[in-house]
Image 1 (cartoon, rainbow, N blue to C red):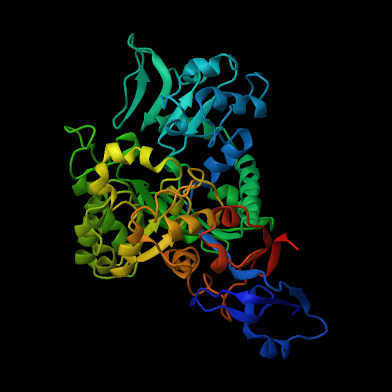
Image 2: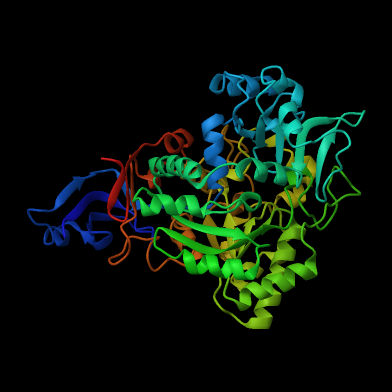
Length: 535
């Protein structure tokens, strides 16, 4: 067994805020020692490979508990439009990456955000049609709850002025009934599925490989992959694993609506350290930003409307209970406060019916919540799967939540510290490609609750700030715990998998420094003792 010894003065184990000055020593794929320099030297021999990281920062690899792997990888290929300041700029950025109108493939960029645009209006097909007459273009928005398509994309799916809107979705239209090119919520699903069904597992595996390499470059060693609209990628991931090319651990879910037999077959088939089935996932609502988040009281700017749930409550309770009976974890997207309560009610029903089976069910996002429901996370042992970089990132005073849900409800948006203080457990992620994959952005946001411009003074709902330790722990051990894998990774301990990231700077010294965090270099990433990024 050839050992690797990593020397560093700032070793963060995730077990406590205290840093260790010493060694982490790996043998094969596991950690065999974490401790002082003097004790570590006794395990080093002439065959040991030594890495000296001096005053850098060594920690467990980040575990991003909430990504949409394939959707994000596809966007990276054709164009991420996250920082475009207008519809015209988004088109220019897309054109720079896809200059030819050949008609022989789909263009699938996205992550555009019309709330960043000067006028804030939704885009239309005409701006894309100007450059792409033969090539179909389908661009998911930042939240992945809407899409912008050109005329050729609509034509290929036979969407016209006579096409009816699906339940829980719509094709936005001009006054004459013709589609504008903006597709909303459930109307997105058949289009995206239809596009991706044309791809083979071999093609998908190429995108997955590129994603894993990008994740490693950010110090990410594990991810929780959630199916966007039921699109599954585990066969593609298995091809990479079998070839020895999978460099990030993938803990994936399948759709809540899958037949139980299929869910159980998938669990039986995928249970390795690198590729694991961990549960089922579905949407209870959309997002408050799109007025599709399910709210307990009407929207402030739409006083007769509070949206609705995407799943009938009695069916939800019955289905969650069935999954619990079969020891299957459930993960429910819930952004509005009514959706959060609906999910918690379903978990409570299953708990009362089948007892505590330590399934670690999850509520995803929690963009609004009634204060009466905060303590229920700890009481019901439900994981708060949250994404700190969803917090306001620019123009705090102009953030749509002020007018959409009002300042009183906004006080309880993303209540990380309140959930933690009442016994709830946090698992951090990015919701990539909704936000960037860089986990240090989320750490900065959780610690400061500031926009990129440093607003508001003192931070947004400052009582919800987390310490650096609590933030890092939620992004390492917290996500491992939520993945039912904390006995194998999530902290630096002897006997655990050697999943390690080394950063240029000590994050305890610069977590409130935006540029210092966002631009920090990753020096090395290791997965199972194998160096997958850096020296």
